[in-house]
Image 1 (cartoon, rainbow, N blue to C red):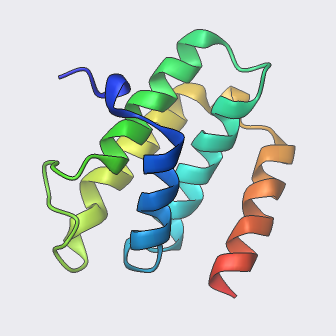
Image 2 (image 1 turned 180 degrees about the vertical axis):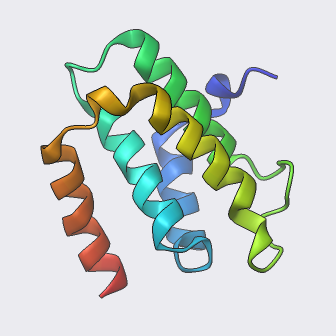
Amino acid sequence: MNTTEHYSDTNFWDKVKNFGQSAGKEVIEKALWLYYTAQDAKTPTWAKTTIYGALAYFILPIDAIPDVLPVAGFTDDLGALAAALATVSAHVTEEIKEETAQKMRQWFN
C-alpha cells in the first residue's frame, strides 16, 4: 500500500486532536517536527515524500498495532516517525523545533 496517497492535512490534525493525549508528547512532537518540515519550502521533494509516508501511516486507522491499545498502541507509529526523522533530520531546523515547542506548550501545559 502506498501510504502517501492517504495523507491529508485535515486527517493529520484530526488524529493529533483526537489522540494527542493518548499518543503522548514524544509521538506528537515527532509528528509535528515532520509536519512542519514538510511545510518548509526548502525541504526537498524526496524528503517530503518520506515525511508524508510516515505521517500517512500515523493517521491511518489500521496499522500494525491498533492505536486504541493502551501504551503499545502508538509504538509502531513512533517507530515510523522516528525512521522518517532519521532520514530527513538534516532538514529539521531549529525554527521548526521552536515552532513545535510552542505548539507542545499550548497543548500539554
